[in-house]
Picture 1 (tube, rainbow, N blue to C red):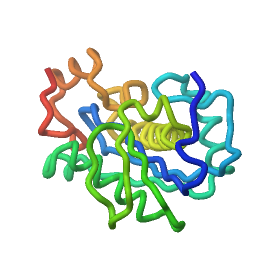
Picture 2: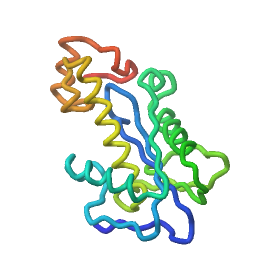
Picture 3: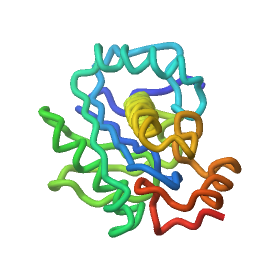
Picture 4: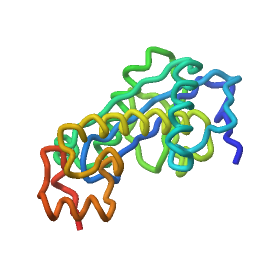
Length: 191
């Protein structure tokens, strides 16, 4: 499926998050502004491509984007304000780090809160439609995966190096066996 540039007449910043459905760890978000001639044949929604390809794309995006930023919101904050609000907060934090004019924010999903009166458009499955959202999905996913691999070294009972904190059968069984770790979100049911 060919990804499109949302509008070449505007400075468009694509935003996406990673880790929304996880049982452990933070939610990460990325914001990306791409040049009008940006293209990579393997770029797609991060969930649809292998990890090795995501790594290659991350380097390409970081090198060729006009601007990009990553932000995270902790599992404790997620428990306090809920995952939807935490995802939006992470996106806002990433957008704040973009030191560039933005005409329009395009957001993967159907919910967002206005950011400093910048126009925005929510796009369901936007990461499979538009290159800037797909690029944001790659960055958010790879940075979150790196974080989960890092904390796996401190808390290796849950195999986060492999499952990245998502509710796999194995992860849920490990929670039953060991209980919740200091990285788990307490507001999610583990069964």
